[in-house]
Amino acid sequence: MQSITTNAPVTHVLDIQNLSVSRSGKVIIRDINLSIKKGEFVGLVGPNGSGKTTLILATLGILKAQSGSVSIYGQRPMSTGLNGKIGWVSQAAANLPKEIRLTVRELVKLGTLNSRNLLWRDRSGKESIDKAIKMVGLEDVEHRDIARLSGGQRQRAVIARALASNAEFILLDEPLVGIDRGSRNSLLKLLDSLCHDEGKTIFMISHDLTAIRQTAHRMIYLEESIRFDGPSEDFPDLDKLADLRGIEPVHNQDGTHHDHSKEEE
Image (tube, rainbow, N blue to C red; front, side, top):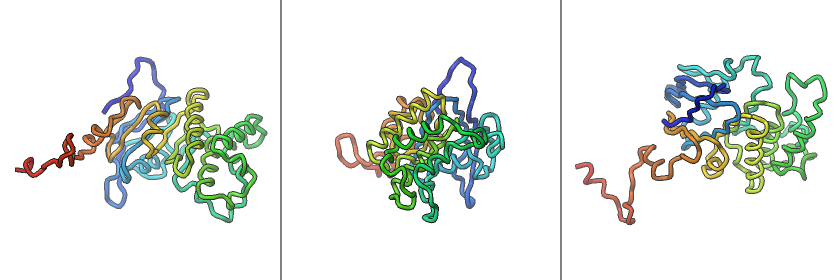
């Protein structure tokens, strides 16, 4: 496994050691060792069922681990000391009940509230709300009820809520799904700005390898265990990725069929 090394002292936002999680008697992730530094943008990729969402849920303390440990800012997940420090966008976040009567702007505003500003007005809150709504392309519907939005628009509104937060560590599970090209690029630019300009730490799952490779500082390839962890520019090409997954070639380089029967003799 490749990793980023530095001689400077490192303060880890996230530190995972020997983490294994099983569900219904089946091992989903095994022996995960992972650290994320402040200000990093880390992309988590892998095939469907590889354990990406399980890893995020175990990181948040939503799923119980069979072994290993998770530390966020030196504290256990769900600790009261982490209140207001973590922003989370799940795959199901956009499936809000139709009975909820909130406008887009009101929903996004909820993301700016935390234990530190709940009792007084935060002057930067309006700017954060405006910027988040603009980045996900919902300016024209910001005063429309969530119930009247399309599925894709709902997802963008929930993403904006997380982006408007003052959280220092933001975790996102497939935030690019249902977003058009322009909004996707704006969102990725915003996430990049949060890392570089505001020191936020991003941990994002995405199936869009091209988008995440061009934006994330570092990529992790997960398939039960971590198969790759390193700078995005060093992420393996398709042939090397197939080798990491143990996938054998079906065709030769000249396009002819690869005869596996001879290898089995």
